View (cartoon, rainbow, N blue to C red):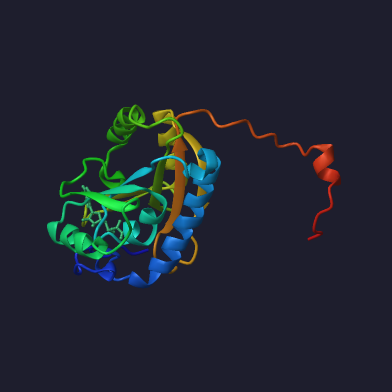
Amino acid sequence: MERRSFLLGTSVDGVLGGYGHVNDADIIGSEVFLKTLLQERLVNRGTNQHLVALDCGSGVGRITKNLLIRYFNEVDLVEPVAQFLDAARENLASTGSETHKAANFFCVPLQWCIGHLTDDDFVSFFNRAKGCLKPGGFFVLKENLAKKGFVLDKEDRSITRSDPYFKQLFRRCGLHLFQTKDQKGLPRELFAVKMYALTVDTPPKVHKTKSKTHGNRPHIIK
Ligand SMILES: C[S@@+](CC[C@H](N)C(=O)[O-])C[C@H]1O[C@@H](n2cnc3c(N)ncnc32)[C@H](O)[C@@H]1O
């Protein structure tokens, strides 16, 4: 497992710590996840709604440019490194349209980047943020995962939590796990990455017993 310094330059390779080649796999993984969410959470996949997103820790705008701008009418970017945000502005200048655009560029640090939050601050943040979600809205977290417990990075003072650790925190926040997916295609030496979609409303009950009708339907024999 390795985490490299972010500040290698104002490029995609730079913000991915020298792992620019994972961009395609990362974007495809996020897009599949996002599409399912929009389909399942919003009426008509949100096509009749004005959708907005906040790209937190946007770097040079990689995710907004390659993904978010195609699905959201407005994307705001938050990034504390001015050079990154300037590069994002430049990268996004000719991307999008009147109805799908990068709207605001905020050069400020967030106080709640997950890997730098204590458990109590994590819970406190989501408890406040929950109140700002529109009906049908959701949080998406795409995070590095420790195999178990947590891993402390003494260099950047961040914590990488395990999947059960995150789930325990989500429960403390009163958030429901609407959907989750593993990121595929990352180099083996990196942390595993998982996507979580979190909602405030209770998910519909999943009935685990197979209905007779379903059991009798034709299906592929594996
Ligand atoms: C690994 S880079 C990822 C950039 C971008 N999300 C991407 O995937 O291309 C992490 C980004 O988070 C930003 N960052 C670090 N601390 C932050 C904070 N407190 N608030 C907002 N962004 C932060 C860094 O400057 C950097 O651009």
